[in-house]
Length: 141
Length: 480
Image (tube, rainbow over all chains, first blue to last red; front, side, top):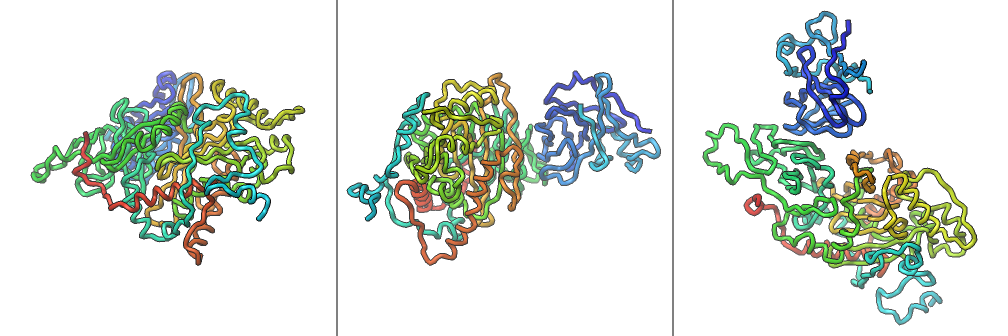
């Protein structure tokens, strides 16, 4: 069964800001860009560096280490050195709280059940996207 | 001899102007809100009338020589300051084979690092990208540099006892900031940007306060012609009556004003809201008003107006647009002249930058050669709008990359009328490129006045191509 996790109050994330949170062992970046909220993997698909200190603008996030950029809506890699997307996660706002849906890799029958156990046990070190961009969707605010 | 030519007898070369038409200065002189000095000046000089040899457009070896001689010595627009607002922000600028990481290293300091790892040469950032960094780490072996260019890390330093870390800073091109633009120059011996432009032009640019504008729209397209042909397509209004007949109804094309300044800058002023001398007697003032085309009409909405007796289209448009632009863009234009509101001011800074400081036509063009094909170039058009009165600067627009077969009208945010004009300008280019290659005549023939900017531009090309090659030398490009 799908279960959204409550991660931040909306007031904690003013326009142009972003925050990393842990959900089900995944490092998830919650972003307020271009008048929308997004939830994406905090881990760059190129060299598994964290994205949270990267530049964010007009609906994209850049990796601060090697410079890859990703579309916050789709997770698509916008420029080298990344070629693979990052995961995106569904997001909703309930009673002023931001909630995200990140599949629990320990739960049977979830979309990310194929994810490796070792990755699930290493907080913030998910090496590959658990949710393909085609499957992912967010709700804006 | 026709009566028209007879009237010009006795003039020296370059002194003839469009017969029977008011000059640009006479048109502007009748405006209600007076134009500033930089508009009211003239600076034409006859520069010869011999043909321009065409090998420069069609010979790959010539393009190679330009990369070694011209691009390594000239001041170039790399990015806007707004592209790198925070310390650590960077923007990769490429020209030909050269690549730079334009980086804000302090609130008021920008550096241009040569974009190559000093280990085995990998680019530290991919071309065409931007972002923010606390270091520039090579994605191959992990050597890294601080944002100021000093070396941060050599992986396994025990294996590199022969490398002097003190000399391992990233080489830098020179950087100067002007009007919100970041200019770079690879030549440590080049004149300052101020000297390069000259005092007159520097004063013009200072007066425009382009640092108070922001990039509202940014469109890029690859064009099927040598970069110099593409530039020359925009250097005169002589082509308007044939290429843009829809515009001529409200454009003083044949009586536009052309000026040159020193070796690196030239301009035209082409008045709008007046009838083309080619069309005198065929249209009314109301027709002129109805057919006016704006570069930035997105700010205006859909409006029409009927002229009263004795009203001129030009004055009516100036009055109308001033109020509408102010409202639509939340800006104060009360101190801006009618001419600046309406007219097309086209300046070029050699080698490849166009600045249009007007309000209705607020563009920046940049043309860069395709390093792999001398018959192609990359054209960018940016629209700069005034920053809103509340002082909140919008983020610069993301570049829209058009495909080869796409119309400029397809770029989201582009005014359809202006997009059509750019299509008309650029659709001629492959025909000119191929025609020059096919021709039995090996020179361009130029008008003495209306095409003076083409001659002035090519004289600057000649100057740099006559020099010895100058490749970047790491030893001379260490940080200050």
